[in-house]
Amino acid sequence: MKNGEIITAVAHVASEYLNLEMTMQKGIALIKEAAENKAHIIVFPEAFLPGFPYWNAINSPLQNHELFLKLYENSLSIDSMEIKRLKKVAKENNIIVSMGFNEKVNSSNGTLWNSNILISEKGVILNHHRKIVPTFYEKLTWSNGDGAGLKVKKTQIGNVGMLICGENTNSLAKYSLIAQGEQIHISSYPAKWPTQTNQNGQYDLEATIKMRAGAHAFEGKVFNLVASGFIDKQTYLLLEKYKVKNLTTLRKTPSAISAVFNPSGEIQGNYLSDQEGILYTTINLDDCVKAKQFHDISGGYNRFDIFQLNVDHSRSSSINFVNGDNDE
Image 1 (cartoon, rainbow, N blue to C red):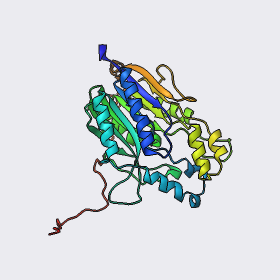
Image 2 (spheres, helix red, strand yellow):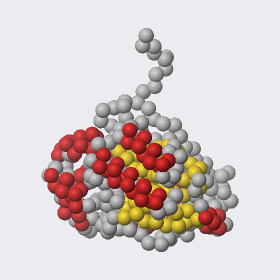
Image 3 (cartoon, helix red, strand yellow):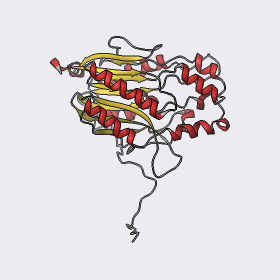
């Protein structure tokens, strides 16, 4: 890194909707493209592999069984061949990769988590986070996560933490990362998030992201890399094929943005919204140090004799064997 400058790549892209292999191929191509453009890290949207379950917002749960099955069949486990491929491409291209995915596990044939992994430029999984609580209608697809991923990891570009979508509203979750010396924060979002059948009071992800991401960047004196999804024509066609209703509501819902927020809480450079692409931004962690002079809420600008926070970093499990059963 020249003069402490870090080149970040934020992927504002659509999934090859509900097709794991095609989305993997797209993701790998984007990783290689970012590396060719000298990026040190690339960040993908929430649930990029193989897509966000938009139908939960606009369709009756009684009509979503086939869509859930399709999503489950195209989801992946942390020890899957797809994750191994991502680790390999990260190492081969000397780039850090943050990837959102729908996660399944061997202990269940139907449970999914909204997960994110951080892979180092050496192809090592540094962090594996499951969204603590799915938001609103997301509970129809995803289960509660745990605190195992609420960690800040030291990388070649600085100390990196991550939260998924609505978790960036959770003050305790955000502080738990700031207090671990976070310098670069990763925020992942879907393309849209409908909350109303009409446009009055409809959830505006662009406005929400600017407020949330700017606040975390300013409060923690960190750089906040925001990667949001994109809905393309093929996604709408697939939802139509499955007879998802109220697609007009989804189409009219305000779109999210992808951007990088600096420690002053402002967008650094440009941002992406209505077209796919990779957003490249150059940052310098010296800006975090300078800003800490004003408010360092994990240091000199706090009162730890008054406030205390306990975080459980253990991974939840469906079963614990106590006596060490022997099959022989």
